[in-house]
Length: 151
Image (cartoon, rainbow, N blue to C red; front, top):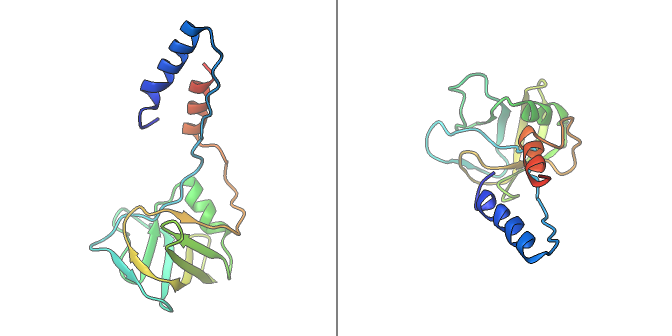
């Protein structure tokens, strides 16, 4: 679960019971994560106007490198790439960088153009604000976390 959650939550329950108080706890479930893959070398500069490949890793060695951005082929990330179409905006690293889909080569490969560049590092988040992605909103971990909160 991460952080201090597993240490603090039982303490809240313990002291609330001792004090005869009803304490509500809000659990923020993470949901699916979309992230770029690992780097083949140093951080990759994304330059405004450049056209790049953006796709699912073909194997364990298909890492991010100049001219290619990759994502691990998880169920959720496969659904993300599949949902993209020409014109779709992908935001990387909390929107610091932005690319736009120029061509959908297949359900696993896109051609994108850099709209707002930067230095791309490993495992940075990807957000697709105007795209409906066909995957579950709750991950297995979310369900486990919710069940833990409901004890």
